[in-house]
Image 1 (cartoon, helix red, strand yellow):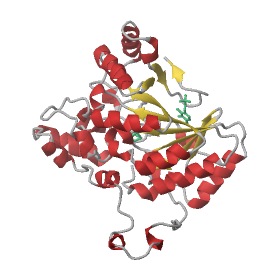
Image 2: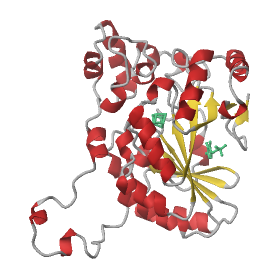
Image 3: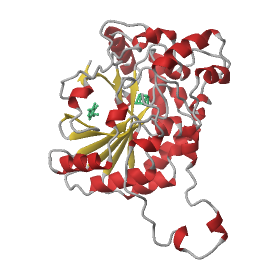
Image 4: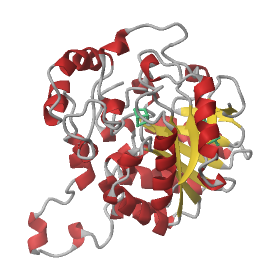
Length: 361
Ligand SMILES: *Cc1c(COP(=O)(O)O)cnc(C)c1O
Ligand code: SF4
């Protein structure tokens, strides 16, 4: 993945001064403050751990883990913000949050069927940054960066730099949406779309809502989980204002990811009228027990989030050690169904290239 700063993925028009802003009022002590203090979340993103040695030291891991971490890091760099690290158990290499982000030497091993673009997205990316695979829904690569690098990610080999639209490409993408009345939902994806800044996102959403046949805005993001401070006033401003119906699909794999700050961030999103859903990936060593899955669903609901999808792993090169075989996945879900109300059951699915929807298992 390209190691770009969050704002690089998106080229919005230059900032327009707002009437009545600090720039236009008469002299006051305020004029000595910088006009654009970066938001707190951006500082946390910039300060994320990006060195395997630092990650091992921060969590008190034995040196034995470092060699593997460095091997994996060379293939796909470490990135994890402190707010997420703070939810991990010190000294425990099997912590379910750490397992998601700690590189291992196994990532170097090739396994048959595990490839660099398992979803064949390269074939479906029509104009750059737009993926139209499913009826009525279009996926827009809004920011190439992520707040966290997940070791199992199917996009770990994705050519982000080539999918970072320029202003002219955004115009072409928006024209394509305007010309296709069958599209009712725009899905902001990435990378992580909320790694783009709020000025850029407000610009994009204003363009989208001007397209009359668009009804829904969906945002697929992990940022409210890894940096809950991302859900700040600036974000809530454009989100609350849009006429579009809003769905945020979070990505949480384990109950331990949901702390009080995440619950508070979710409450802010709900107050802005957002429907909250969650997708998880079934991962060996992270959430592959019935207990872990049941606790996850219960905890999601406590945070006001409904389980949506439970994905089996996409066969991406470097992630084979996370795989849970299909039979075992079905068994886990059958056990889960005996324990949970129907509305807390995620749908077990796989993404099959060329299919018109996710494929139920
Ligand atoms: C998963 C996905 C969607 C959304 O699918 P839903 O079943 O509506 O959640 C849309 N476009 C692409 C390319 C996808 O991979
Ligand atoms: S946040 Fe999502 S896109 Fe980014 S690395 Fe993790 S799984 Fe992949």
